[in-house]
Length: 383
Ligand code: SF4
Image (cartoon, rainbow, N blue to C red; front, side):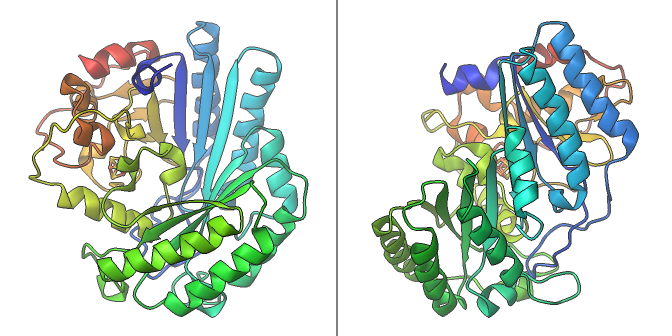
């Protein structure tokens, strides 16, 4: 099936779930406010009802669960419960496809957690590193202020020593100050993880778009970044690891699988920055097949309080509150708001499909309060 068909088919459902919006880290560049805590029982049950209602109507073949936060593994019991709920339906043959991915800081991803998630087909992970040891700890700190590297590295080494069939993408943040530490990290990754195809590396520069923590963000010169990343990519690919990189703009425009692109904290800063830079840019480049999950009618983000949104970056933007998950498993959606996220389908506009947050139209509409059935979403969304 083509990307376009996958984006539109109601037989596939992607739920990006934030089981908690709290985090155990306080990265120096993070944009999240941590105001919403852990998902409550009524919303956990509502997600189950939503999935079962779709299965009962025979309107769902494949489910993709994407865990995001906050730090999703702070609520790992919620992640286990919902993943295993979906996995039971897969094992019973009611779901033909099930896949899950987790964007985590890696601190709580110990071996038992990894094993249990992979057993429930939640086998892809993205973990961010900002350098080796104290280079990482300078920016990715625990809430108490202590370093986090040792524990994450221990978890990664344990994963490496296991036979668990996971996929871990190491997201390597480049900034103006972490060159030396990044060199060390790359050497260590090559030595410890080289040749293990369960691991891959993704390079991303941290950019600065202002905001309350902008003073802490050390932006890299573009040319220096290019030269550094090319050199580091070569070290890792010589060691038998797949690599990719985005040094500028919304990474979702690269054509990589959208869920694995998402990131905790600062990388979102860069991504939103890219989105902003595109404001006013001439749209309508030819469609290249890549569609951000935020543009897809069959992808919904469910926040810990049941708010439904589309984009994992613009969490506090009113236009990204497109509805709510009701306790009976139905969703109440605002069709006007949904349609602006999906406007790229009208002209197959590469920018609007690749990052619909860019040039997102301003809205002045009243939310539609009537609950709409999930199978109506596609029609409503692309109308
Ligand atoms: S809409 Fe843009 S900023 Fe939002 S998740 Fe997609 S690519 Fe990122």
